[in-house]
Length: 129
Image 1 (spheres, one colour):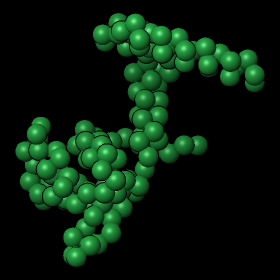
Image 2 (tube, rainbow, N blue to C red):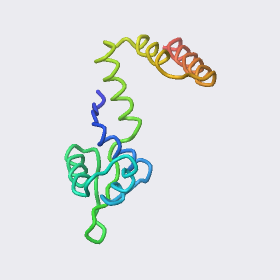
Image 3 (spheres, rainbow, N blue to C red):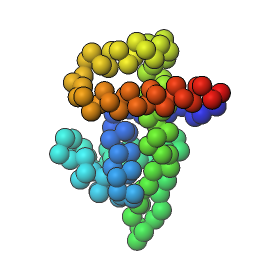
Image 4 (tube, rainbow, N blue to C red):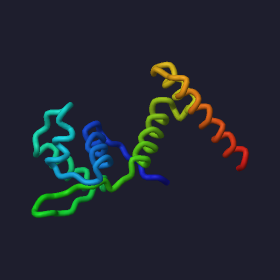
């Protein structure tokens, strides 16, 4: 069974910084988050320490400064969080979830073409089972 990840908004924002950069110090992470968030250095440091306890990040020490990196992959987190959302909000009904997304977001013809392609691919997978 796949591990479930439930990241809060700030945790997810920090993970995006680490996924994009590969590694970052507390200061680097705080600066990357700064345009939308005014966070204290200690807040980011505390959050990274808690995330490390949960196994989301790891660190190495470089000249007495902790350098953090993601310990979980972005695709793992997306899959886990979307599955949880589908289960909790749509009682596992993927059709209802997709319908809601199509009705609530602006969709381009390119988006629809990609969705059709993904559906055809999934149909082929099911036909070969």
